[in-house]
Each structure stands twice: as structure tokens, then as C-alpha cells.
Length: 195
Image 1 (cartoon, rainbow, N blue to C red):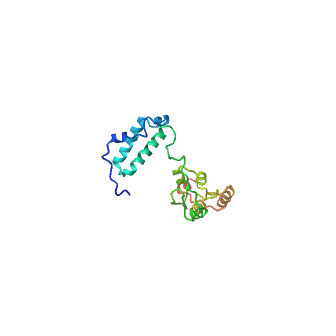
Image 2 (cartoon, one colour):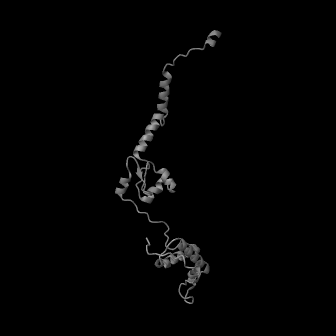
Image 3 (cartoon, rainbow, N blue to C red):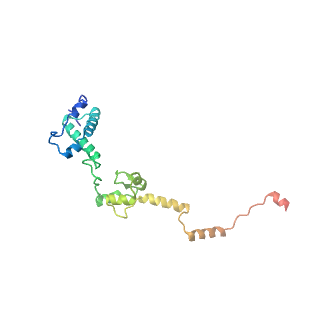
């Protein structure tokens, strides 16, 4: 990305400490609070460590220093860092994208764009539940969380195992089995001799 950039590893720490924001006589009370010596020292240390490991062009160095200093000042004052939003704005999908995300074999996640048979485990991994996912992306209340083929497969498995049958179906089946004649078993020879 930065082809003509030369690393600034040769810049000593003291040169960053000489950076001043305006004339010291013209600073307001607010500037004195924000520009505490500790904040400047910490800013200089962070920028030096960053520049020693990553090549930064000289033109971007001042922006880096200002950004680090603003972030540290925001953290020191107890507020959010400068430039940080409370919650990033999430782009809501269009109705066409919502329709395309539902396929018979999988549901496409709006978080990472990957297909999933069921979204529940994926959503919990990202700290969401189904309702918050629907609200976050503006999805309708009837948006599925399981693909159609996967639901049909699980339903067929449950029916083959006899799950989900109510009391009526279970009693009719048990009555039909009880009415069948049982095969006779042979008595062991010892019991016949004793009789």
C-alpha cells in the first residue's frame, strides 16, 4: 500500500515529546486538562511502539499522533474515544436480499454471509437471539431460523422414532400390540420334571 514509505524507526522518543498544541500561553483551561503531561508521554510511547513495528509514511504521522492523543484523552475523561460511535450503523437488507437468503437447503446469515442449516447456534456465538437478530436486520417476524429441508429431515426422523405422538395415538398402538397373540414358549425340562 505504501510503496514509497520509509520506516521511521530512527525517530527517537524525545522528538515526539517536543510536540506542542499551540502556544503554552494561549492554551485554555480545557486544553491544559486534555494535554496533561501523562497523556502526551503515553501518546508518544504508543506512537513510537507502533512506528517501530509498522512502516508509516511521514505524511500520515501527524494524523496518527492526533488520533492516538484524541483517543487517550477521550478515555481519560471517562467518555467514549473521539470518533467512536456508540453502535455501528448496520445496513438493513432489502426485501429481495431477504428472499434470496432463504433457500431450501440453507439460510444465509446477514452477519457473515455464510449458509447455515439452523441459525440458532450461529446467533448465540455472536451474542444474539432470534428476536434481536430479526430486529437488528429488519427481518419479518415469520423469518425462519431453520432451513426447510433440515426441518423436514428432523421431522421424518422424529416420526420414525415414534416421537410426538399424543396419548390417544400411543394408547391405540399399545392396545393393538396387546391384542396380538403371543407366541408360546417352551417350558424348560427341569420345570416339567418337577411337575
